[in-house]
Each structure stands twice: as structure tokens, then as C-alpha cells.
Amino acid sequence: MTNFDLYIPTRIYFGRDEEQKVGELVKATGSKKVLLHYGSQSIKKSGLYAKVVSSLKAAGVDFVELGGVVPNPRLSLAQEGIALAKKEGVDFILAVGGGSAIDSAKAIAIGFYYEGDVWEVYEQKKPITKALPVATVLTIPAAGSESSESTVISNEEKQMKLGYSSNLVRPVFSIMNPELFFTLPKNQIANGVADMMSHIFERYFTNTKNVDLTDALCEATLKTIIKNALIVSKDPSNYEAWCEVGFGGALAHNSLLGMGRAQDWACHGMEHELSAIYDVAHGAGLAVLTPSWMKYVYKDNVAMFLQFAVKVMGVDGSYRDPDSVILEAIGKLSAFFRAMGLPQTLTELGIEEKNFELMAKKATGVAYGREERPLGGLKKLAWQDVLSIYKLAK
Image (cartoon, rainbow, N blue to C red; front, top):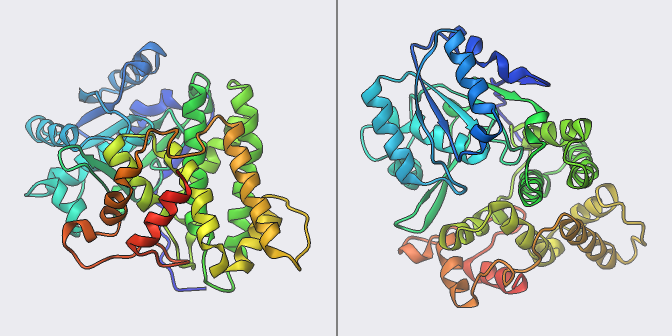
């Protein structure tokens, strides 16, 4: 196990009707003026917007609002939010929505105190020393941004999607009422499940030895999500199953499961190029790439993938033939994704082979004239490796 620094300050209010507390919770932070940040009109149609606004007003919390967040949140809207927050003297951001609204809120929180263009922080990984506090009311369990230190933003002009991490943007608190997930379309449920599972895979598949505890935590969380995802896909109003999936999504990306282990993150790096150019749903892209990545890298750590096959996917085969056991497990994972209604190939996503090489070179930095930065931890992937994985997934 490697050294680590674990800091998870986000307070999570979990359960029915917890969103009704939001006004008092914001007021307790001492905030004078809030930016209410959200996405589409869905929170207005569902009545959640009215509940949040009513709660803020009842608590005497002054606020301004900015909607319009879309999947793969845009830099341009974050820049608009930064300008609005500065103009209005905002000192707190409340994101109502899924990972895209939360990530956009975090970009605004970073940019509020940054003197240059906030994109520089993402592109150049510039350290920050201050950010506006952020809180969330979660409507889509997927990205785990409600308790993570991470944020991802898309620069639509440059066709780039980049992430940034700082404990300064971990939410102060997050409200998670599984009843708010009942009306999610099946494709959003499926995309969210693939995203949260990928967050675990990126931490789980490691060359680090003696990590029995976090191995077991990863495995238990994956099995819990898989079991209950199938339930909510068929019965979206199953509260108890949503509790398991929703809390699993938060655990998947709040840092705990990756402590003491070298992590991978190759699949995320490869998928960001799909989203940047084709604007595909992040979870859908991950569902396509993950099985192909597994097939490409598993021989670099057969024992790790055997453990996954047995303890997560429940494969019962001969350890004398590890290849067949592992490939059966990868097949079972693909079958689960298919049962959730997720795509199986890049062709299904509309990704054209003519762009595979460009995406591979962008993912590793070669396209920008920089020294190559291979992806991954379990196996280092040069751009040619990434290209091979794209071809496996086509």
C-alpha cells in the first residue's frame, strides 16, 4: 500500500425530502448571496426548482441564477457564470442537477478568484489557492462530483475536454434524495451506472500490492451497483434500489476506494476525446471502451483480472486457464452493459475510424506538439496503444 492523504469534507444529507433543508443549510454557511446553477427545464417541470427556490426564500437567502448547463459542460457557460458571479457579488454556488451542473459550478468557483481565463487552470494544471464554496442538490447519480475533488469542462472551440482536481472544490454539502431519480430516462440511468463503475475500475485495476481492504471495498461497491442497476432499470421508482445505486456512485468517486493504490484512468482519458469531438454521453463512451481496454491490457496483470473475474463477475472456471476465465468475465461485463441498453461499439456512437489516430494523439498530448504523456497506470499506453484500443472497440 502506498502513502496517502485522505480528506473528504463533504457532508451528505441522504434520504426523502432532504432537499427541503437546502435554504437553512446554505444560510448556516454564512453566505450573503448565492448563484443557483442548473441545467435544463427538467428541474422546473419536476417541481424541484420551486422547492429549492422556496426553501432559499424562506431562509432569507439572496440568490441569482444561471441555467443552461448541458452534458459535457461547456467552458463558455462557465465563463458566463464567472462574470455573473463577480458582477453580483456572489459568495456561494448551489448546483442543482447531475455531474455536468456540478462540474460547471466548480469551474465557476475556480474562475471567480483566478485572474486569467479559467481554461488555463484546466489546460496547464495551474494550482489554485482559493475557490468559491459549492453545494449540490443531486438529480442524477453518475459522475460522483457531489463529493469529489474533480471537475471536467469542455472547450467547444478547441474540441478539448479536460479535468482538474483540487480539494478546494469538494462540495461543502450535498443533498441526495433517491426519489429525485425516479423520473430519469433509461439511457441516463445506464450512462450514469457505466460512469460510476468506471470510476471504480480506474482505481481497482492496479499493480499495487497489499491493498486487501480497498480491493474488497471496490468489489463490494461494484457488485452492489450491478445488482441494483438492473432493478432500477426495470423499476425506476424502486426507492431502496436507488439508495444502493446513488450511494454507490458517491463512494465510487469520493477518493476512498483509491487510497493507497496506484490508479489507472486510461479509459477516462480515451473517452474524453470521444466527448470532445462527438459530444457523446460520457458513460456510453466508457461502456464501449472499457471492455476493449480490458482485453488489451489484462495480460500485464493476469492475477488482478482473475480476481475481478471471480470476485466481481462471479466466473467459475479453471485457474489453469486464466485467459478463458478473464475473457468470460469481460464478456459478462459487456452483457451487463447491453442489458442496461448501452452501446457496444464506437460505430454505434457514430465515431468515425478516420478520427481514431487524431483522438489517440490528442489523448496522449502528441497532437499538440508536446512530449508524449502515456495514459494509464496498470499498463502505460502510448498513442499507438490507444489507437489499437479504439480499433478493438470499433
